[in-house]
Length: 154
Image (cartoon, rainbow, N blue to C red):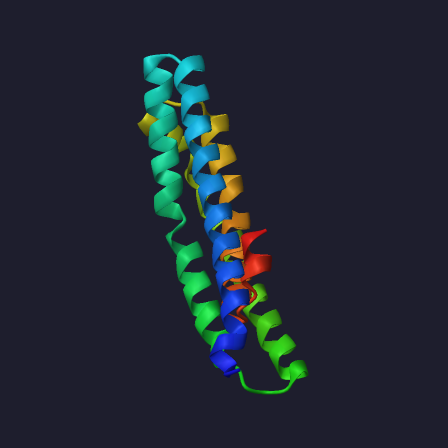
């Protein structure tokens, strides 16, 4: 049996796990939209949609961190200790990036709330969610680069 053939079932299983997890995330996102659409007034739902869109734009650093971390981990050929050190550096960078995003978001919350005509507390909650996004992106990149797709799907 060739090396490719021996890895094929695990790759198929890992791909299925990631696909199912992404599908579930999309269903939950759709459910959130449905609930919000029924519970909020038209104006409130417009503000909610604008905040969600702003969150998508603010998640771009998360995707960048994920991509960089995945590539970096995939190229690591050193010892396990060196890999752990590099991964620690990536996650520390993500933590600093998350703190910076959260700080900027918190400082901008009053202006964002005024511009979008939403309560300041809504903009604050969005800002507080930015920090974990950066860390999650880097952690997902570490898993992706290490070909740990089953863990990534969880």
